[in-house]
Amino acid sequence: MDTRRGGISLLRVQVQFTEEQPSALRDIARKEGLSFSHVVREGVNLLLRQQRPPSREELVRPSLEMLGQFRSGTGDLSAKHDEYSAEASEH
Image (cartoon, rainbow, N blue to C red):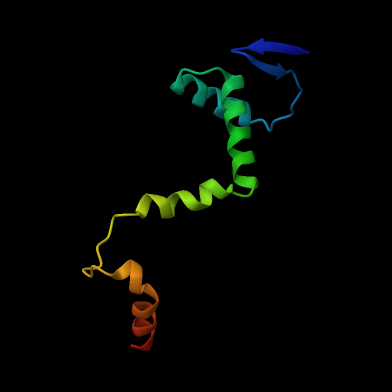
């Protein structure tokens, strides 16, 4: 059965839980003010994100966020970076 919720098509499925899992999920839902189904979907989304390889953007983002955060103290680093790198590896 397909239902529409907020423009997203949802598929109804049957899932089997251990005896403890529904109670724990209901507690989370109650504390967060969410539905049981929403908590289950969020848990599935979390697992899916953990299992897929990161996108190129996710891999590059930390490096891009660091741009401009550090100062070398030299005015010609971009022009002579190979020279400075070779010099640093000698020490």
